Each structure stands twice: as C-alpha cells, then as structure tokens.
Length: 160
Image 1 (tube, rainbow, N blue to C red):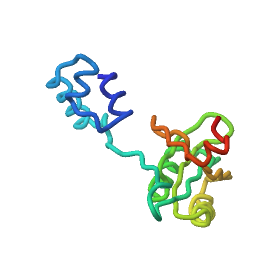
Image 2 (image 1 turned 45 degrees about the vertical axis):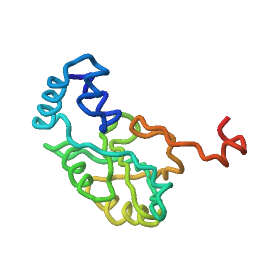
Image 3 (image 1 turned 90 degrees about the vertical axis):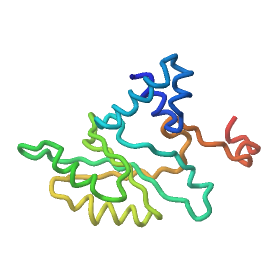
C-alpha cells in the first residue's frame, strides 16, 4: 500500500495499470487499494502542480509566514490553527518545532494582498503573538515536480 500511495503522491495521474506495471501488484488489487484509501480518507485529494508563470495573467505571489502563538488552555495550538486554515489564501498550514509555532503557506494575486491578509486577519487573531513573512521569489521544485529552467537564464549562466 505504501508504495502505491508514494507513486500516486508523486504523480496522481498514474493509472492503476501503470502502477501495477511498476509495482508488480495486480491491477485489480491496485484499484482496490486506491478505492479503499479514497473511502477511508487516506487519500484526501488529487491535485496538479501548475507553473503559473507560464499561464498568461496567471502569476501569483506566494509567501511563507512564520507564526508565533500562545497555546490556548485545553486546545493547545489547534483552535488557532483551525481559524487560520479557513482563509482562502492559506494553501498549507503546519505545526512546527523550533523558533516559531506554525508555518503558513499563502497565495494571492499581489504582495499587497498578502500583506493585508497578514495584518488584517492573521496578526489580528487572539493568541497570535508575532508573524514573519517571507515572500517566495521563485519555485524550483514543488511536490516532487521540478520547474523548467528558463532558456535566457541558462544562457546567462545563472544555472550552471
């Protein structure tokens, strides 16, 4: 099961037949394992990794926001995390060990929209003690997918 799930996580477009050929598990058994994982919530969703820079008018701004919070009595970090994850801008949210408590990956059309999200929504949540926003300048690899190098950058020696 783990091998099948790993393959799907890397490429959700693989068919049960292709997975069967890779793993040596029968196609029927692969299909049953996938169906069971979908029913019990092990597989949450299938998604595509899109290079928005190649889509006319599709460029978006992403930021990683470090969030420090005061854990709440009886709920720890969960209550604040549940508030944050409801915002449309939030793509991913993780509880962290280290210098900050939550890592929040957000996407918006402009840097200004991300800034407004941070001060109007995120920093305004009771229990949030500080935030630190890091704008993502370029994606090289995401969810096992490597973004293509731009020809001009290669020619200028930026990727040698």
